[in-house]
Image (cartoon, rainbow over all chains, first blue to last red):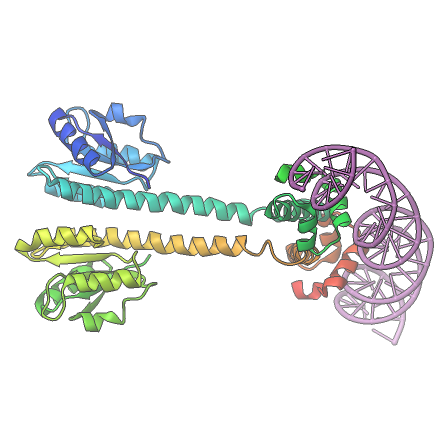
Length: 198
Length: 198
DNA sequence: TTGATTTTTCCGAAATTTCGGACATAAACT
DNA sequence: AGTTTATGTCCGAAATTTCGGAAAAATCAA
């Protein structure tokens, strides 16, 4: 399970306190004190979420939000907002922030929210890998000579049968419903050796 | 995008108010006044989320939570909790509720939370369909004689080439790099007729 | 209908593949 | 060393596939 939390918070005391809360709950805090510092960690395949103060000396939450969304629109950003800043935070959510928390915040609530965000992130990432897997399975058609395509397929089947039988040629031949010799013929044609599957 | 929200709330006034808020935001509220009534809607492939009062005359939120989790552990349940009941709600979250809201609740916050839950649900459902798709693509291997598997593959390639050329056998043969006659041979073997692709 | 064009089938020789059997080799076990 | 077991190669007859040429059938246009 992914559980990194990139923290962007200039107030050192609050930062340490958050780190402690997360550590206690088995999450992996990555504390930073500024957007500049955090920047290089924000990537499209970052295996975690972002927790950022919404108001900081050099940058505000919207910068971070924009940068992050540009980098990966499905990377959750949770904002920490001061007492009177709730409307701003709500606006930020409308613009794509995942959630917000009011600043003197209950550690439990913080962790709950982050876990939700992390689960969301995990789902998105898994979704992506599934998608590329499916693409891989769908594309291999449509090009190459018939004999080339058939050769490839034959090679795949042979390799699969061999690895299923742990490199035992005789048994693989049985499974494939062909005599042992024929399998050897085909293996020779494909330059496959059983040894590679043991 | 999925956007159903199964509402379980015995207080009619509050229920209507919630329905209005959701309607306004383009969600699809399904109002019910009791667990019994809501029960039949809760299924493992329900394309939405559940919003339930945590405390009601006949049942409490934990019943609903348990029933729902039993039915589909990835079906988000958002609980509505009274003013003094926050600790209970937090416990419910630990036990698998998706989130909770304190009862005199801001419609915006309500909708934000539900949207998060819906997004979560959408991801889970899409994930599942991807998974079965992948299974479908992965399983057709590994069984059947080699010649059977090759036949299937050949048939697929042939049909694909033919449909790509709109049923023109000559052109299909060109693409496949074999003489027309050979393609006819193979088509005959597979009982494929070009006419079917025009 | 007639003639031209395309699609499909038929034929048969050449090429390729199959597969049983024999054999050489290597590793594992007694 | 001797036995067993599995790998990998070679041979050659039988079976299957390929593919050019030609004939048959279908389609189309005038």
